[in-house]
Length: 398
Image 1: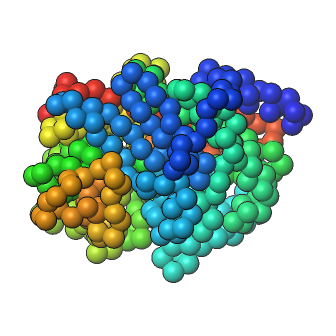
Image 2: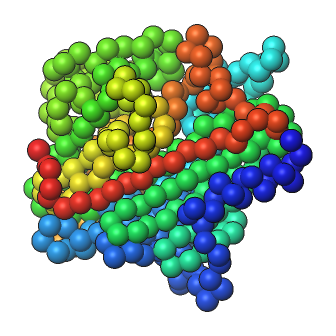
């Protein structure tokens, strides 16, 4: 298929959620692009195609900003230690074992940026969430970013062209990510790396998000990993009642803290969660990802805010912010103004990352047979990820 024909096809895929540019719109004084609906206000920046703010009223009518980030767009490039706040990790999200993979008998070595060079995390030292995207469409309720990732960047083969569209309507945040391999076969796996605290870091009872209830109704299995979180090839059962059982019933994230099984659950000397659960909806036959049930639910009884995550992806990573240490300041839109017990920072376990994605490091696990989901070529279909985050107030919180 000719490149221009494939780009036309790519544009057609974007049409349902990307509207024509409104030339009167632009970023605010802090470099933020705001989109708004009746129930939500969200801000984005070109750096990493990142979400910086998400505003919603809680059960008392108090506005909460429920995602972590910085007040000003310029600070994302200044603070190189930021933990992928709200961005799109790419061209391959999560970890790559030994920073290598093989395609058609050829071995590729990519930038090794984690664990002293033992693996690659989120596309390398200069992954997509550390780069500036281009705003190609912007309206009052939608924004589309694009990036061209060159052949050889961070060691990945071939050029990739990608579009990321965010849209809000009612109390829903939708996004669609599309990527096209234009010159060579290459791995592609994207996600949204948003840090959530549904209390807006303003809970006067706790500074953590361990009070949040989490539910994965289709996830009775997870990917087995070693002590640096690299998949071993094993698929593990989340036995009912075990620390990784979020599928039999909703459970507070902090409920299993104190149980020996949780020690080392997120890697060496780590207590908490940084795990990839599989999403097994196909067990019930054909499904429509938009209508046939959420793959994850996060809720806080304190704020009354609940988010149901709908996605076409077949895995789901949750990270309980084990690595936060109080060095990240809150935004001016968050937290308690005067409370000595809870400083205006993100503490350990103060947030939750939820990543819709495919099976992690499947490019190094051929027995999983995920090649068609993760390896893309110029003559083939584009990579597509779709998700819908649907918010409600105090409806079904356990």
